[in-house]
Image 1 (cartoon, one colour):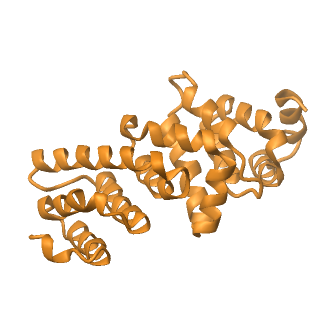
Image 2 (cartoon, rainbow, N blue to C red):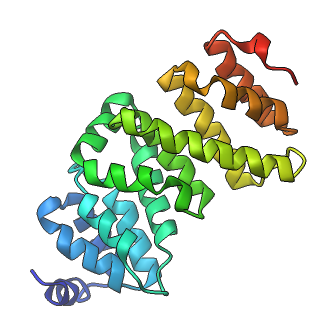
Length: 222
């Protein structure tokens, strides 16, 4: 069914957006071309509703849609916000390790695309959701972007007297949660530095929890 025909069918009702969202929730990967067309060509309200519904459907395969959003060039579309909304919907629906591993296994190209571009994105909230996904894909490639992003944040802390904006705070909390999952001492120094340099209690408290998990709290001085 083409996008035009599909739109004509649904627009004959009084609840176009609601019917569209219901259809997307029941759709599968065979419908991804149409779903992608709707996201990229619809008005913002419709596109956001479709993205939310996409994150709630049973078929987890969405990497072709993520790639289309990432590579689109329209100035009318905030691709980072669209990706943020899709990831937060996926993560809040079921963030169990089994479900997140299944999602990254179903979307390996999307996982690589997001993780490889972690430091390039501007949207700190999007970055935080990508960080939370890192331990559940091909982790031998996931630790490098996490370390790089952590150092960028440390530099920002240094220039702002230990203070961060809300989006960056969410990122740091996501870093600590992800380090908990990795449980790798390679992150020791950067976690200690985040705790030592921060002047925000939510970061210090959460960071100390991560250091306790690693058995290294004594090395953090704040």
